[in-house]
Amino acid sequence: MTRVEYSPAARRLRLTGHAGAGERGSDPVCAALSILVYALLDAGAEGDLSPGAAELRLLDVDGLYRWYRVEASNIMDGSGWPIYVIGIITDIDNQKNLELNLRNQAARDSATGMYNKLATEQAIARFLDRHGLDGPGGYAMFMIDFDNFKNINDRLGHAVGDQAICAMARIIRHNFRPADIAGRIGGDEFLVFCTERLSMRQIRERAAKLGGELHTEWGEGENRCILTASMGVACAPDDGRCFPELYQHADEATYQAKRMGKNGCVFYAEMREAGALPPPDGASVVNAAIDAPAAENDAESAGS
Image (cartoon, rainbow, N blue to C red; front, side, top):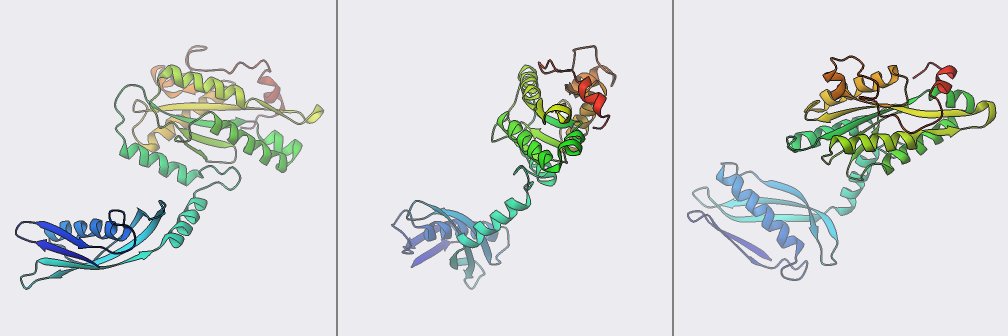
């Protein structure tokens, strides 16, 4: 049994006893009660003495983290000051893991396993809200839109189109860190946000490498299709400090890459410096080292 004593005058807390769920010093029940007691006392200092509850991940006696729910209430003296805390701790590990798995599945694109559009937006928005953006370098957002993808579906079938999408998703993930935020935001559109500060040189190098690896061939003979990607890059904080701004600017840069012949990468910053006009040749387009002419696809289809 654990006992909590509180001295209102000195604002002093004393926990004694042992819950018996683990060795002394590593008992998850004692740890949970300690955390919640302090929370209740802080709430009491602000005038809120209502019962409290919390869900916590604590280390158990086997060295594994488990989820617990702790519910507690203050016991008051005659003057209304909290003197004891009583509570219940419940192991909710199975329930919580099921809940987290379902939430994770709801956030994922079923074909690629990447974030879906909504989850991608939410993850990037959270990062921008919680991190200081000022400093050396920038946080790059890559919008990737495949060129003439309709050709693959029309000539080779949707099953091959699905295989191509999954293959492109693997290439994208391979070119970024696991900590970066990557998602499929449309049929053949992807969005990646780098959560580390990068110099413009590093961003250009990554764009060129990615563009080269995304240049792939599908099918044979008359059904042979060349798949390339047009990319637009916007960087925080210079091109925007929130998700809607960065997304809009990356989208505008991607559209400009399409207009300039596809199979390239346009940086929004250089569009802005050029007054939203196409910049000089080579100034903002990072063309992958590809010998196959983009015109091969353009002659086949004028689609996106």
